[in-house]
Length: 293
Ligand code: NDP
Image (cartoon, rainbow, N blue to C red; front, side, top):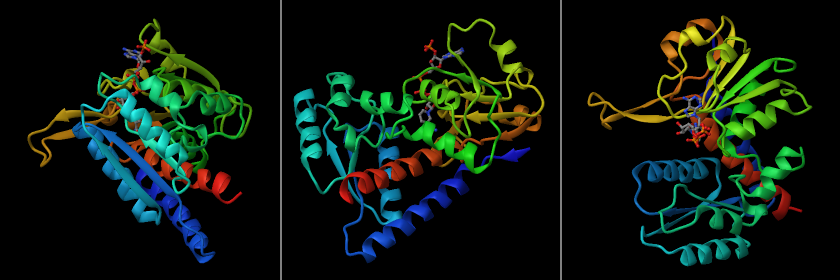
């Protein structure tokens, strides 16, 4: 069994990005700049955003964290988004989800300039991704594709099962893996809560990507020997023995499934760290595409 080490791979990618930033600075240009907007006080969101800002600093990017109160109106947030769209010193920005209930997420997402949409959530970027045009691929699917490529996992002609059809993980994964290009070319099945014969499908699969948010969902009896298993799930589960009071659990029953798999991502340390690295990669891309050109 080979561990798909997202911690190490993301560190490699961040080193490559930092080297690019050093080159940029040597040319007396400003570094790439990522902004993050956080509305409210949600604990998990605060942790995610803080990690993103810290990652920016480590690779030499500039970063700006904009914190807005929980009672922020949709209009106020839209104004903030417009200001960031217009700010030439910012190459890319993210609006951390979920947003408070008084704000329509779709409206906010549509207001982001696709050229600065480093999360890749805008329909322009999603559409361009689907059509194999230059785009920002959302960070989690982009990170999984990088793991597949850097570990040279054969995907061509393989049966892939993606479990979960969200717009940010499952659906884009199913599109990317079915595209006509290297490290894709797979025969993809996209499963969801209405899928009837999931175990039958998973047993026939060479590669399984699991993105549901149900801890330990994928069990050993659902996986054939030699399967590549990619676990996207992250659920906080109470754990009084840990200092934080919780632990992160994936969608795969790792202890059971790992011995049967040819490659597997751990949780934590698999897909999670890749997501942050690819957000940085997208910010660098935004800078190179629109700042340097
Ligand atoms: P969503 O909640 O948006 O989607 C979950 C999907 O799972 C839905 O398509 C749902 O089906 C499907 N599903 C639910 N129950 C079943 C079931 N019993 N059998 C088959 N399919 C089922 O999730 P996300 O894609 O946003 O996130 C999934 C997980 O990945 C979460 O744990 C999240 O925290 C994690 N995540 C991790 C990231 C990372 O950086 N590592 C980034 C993003 C997410 P239906 O459509 O029919 O409702």
